Length: 112
Image (cartoon, rainbow, N blue to C red; front, side, top):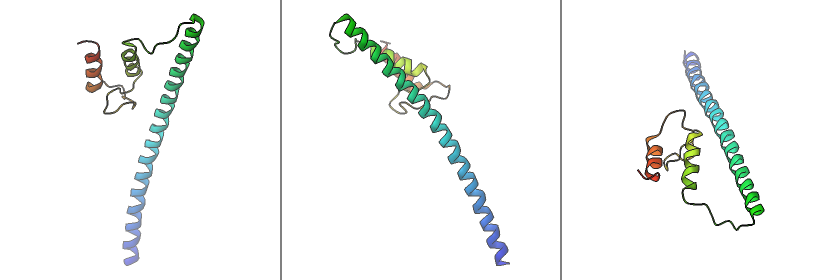
């Protein structure tokens, strides 16, 4: 009788472990996708910086930082690409839904 009870408990533990493993695999897959998106985004930003540096060198004018508003344009672009720009979840994917904190940041910076 005790062995049956122990086998039942082990079976329950196995079910819990399988559930946990499934959750971990899903999270791992989500993180891989997020990592892939962030790497692509980083590569695009680096390519844009390289292109702007090349253009600045051909114009032979010293670069004096970003013009006003360019940072906000970049934040808007990042938001449109599907990432959070708010301080609560910066850089994490938005999952195709709007974030009121991100939108508040965008509208505040655009002068509203």
